[in-house]
Structures are given as structure tokens and as C-alpha cells.
Image 1 (cartoon, rainbow, N blue to C red):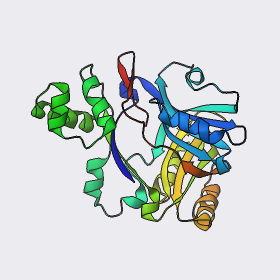
Image 2 (tube, helix red, strand yellow):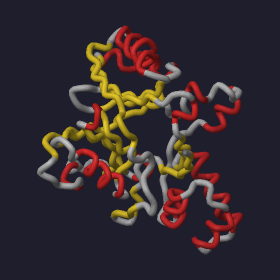
Image 3 (tube, rainbow, N blue to C red):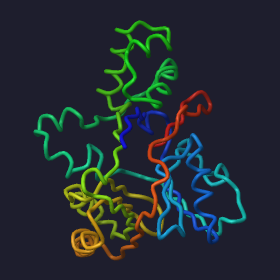
Length: 274
């Protein structure tokens, strides 16, 4: 129900996050989703639209346009779209509705800062934190050969710079929000900033990001039930100035959230998906 993982900033790795959306033949989607969830380069794998579609995120080297060839090949996959996540606009510093118990100063303390460059020596540290973000400094020191004070100092530096953040994966149902959905919005380019600000304030929006593609903003929400999805999410978002189209897909099953451990290493750099 709860897992803490250490996730490096994509830009600090020289990488970019991509959102993948697949349609599969009937009864094949669940099996394909399980294969994706077992991979070390994919995360947030979900079955949506009643199980007719699969969504996931993957992380690729910046500038590498060949994202899809790295994914599993199957004749059961009938359609695939890939959208690069250009900029997160909501959910960056936490889920707004779940931060209500914190003071503004406490929220500022956990808010990510600007990213910085990772070094080669961090390759020993980051995969361990990807397995368990709560790993003790003593255990990290034993695995890396560094002293506990050195490890503690380096982790603090990475977190302070924003190169490393600790993501808390928690079951939304524990907060009374078991109904998860994904929305693909088409927004006028000149309204993207204003729409992003509106979404960042919405209590049911867990994450939102500007993307490439025909729809240019993806949103993940969690709410109480279908009525709340309609009344509190779909209608208000549809009324935001600049939103011209909404594609709503309820999440039928969340297969995985953060990337599985151990994290893969490509070209000497850990590949940990968000």
C-alpha cells in the first residue's frame, strides 16, 4: 500500500520521459501490461478504458527519437502513441489535497528544487535508493564502500539540488479516492500556462504535464467515485478557458507505479523511470 523510492531528475541524467498509450486485441492487454511492469525502463503501468488500453511511462536518452523500438513487440498490439513529457505543471511538489495537513514551510521543505548534474560515483548509490528510498545510511555505506557520513552528505546534496527526489507511492483508496482516471486535454498553446496553474490547484489532480502530440496536456486524477469524477473533475476542467477537447479514460487497474528494482543501467547511467 505504500512504497518510497528514490528517483533521479530526468534532465540530470540527460534523459526524457515519454508517455506511451497502447491498444491491444481483446483479452491481451492484461498480459502485455504485466510484461511492461516487469521491465526496468517502464513505470506507472495501468490498464485503462475498461482494460482495452495500456498506458505507461518510459525514460529515454534525450535526443533519441527511437523510443518505440525498445518496447515489447507483439502482434496483439494494434495501435501505439508516444508523447514526450515536456514539463510537469501539477503534482510536482505533492498531491494538493493530501498536503492540507502540512504548513506552508513544511511544504516548501519537500518541494523539489532545480536539477543538477549527477556524477559517475552516484551510479552506486542511486539503484539502492530506487529499490527502497528508506534504506539506512549504514546500509548504503556498506554497499557503496563509502562512510555513512559521506553517504548522508551526498544524499542531502542530491536532494537539495533536485537531482534526486523521494517519491511516495501510496494507494489513493486509503485517502478516500479509489477512482483513478487519465485525461488527455487539447489546450490552446497560449493558454497552457494558465490551464496548468488551474490544474495545480485542483484537489483531485495528482499529476499533470505538458506533452507533445495531438493532445498536449495529460492529467491523472483520483477522486471518490463516478459522480465526483463528473461533477468535480470533468465539468470544471471542461470549463477552463483554453481547453478545447477532453479525452477521459478511467483507470481499470494500476499494474505498477514506480520502476521496479534493480534499476537498469544504460551507457553507464541508471535508467529509473518516474
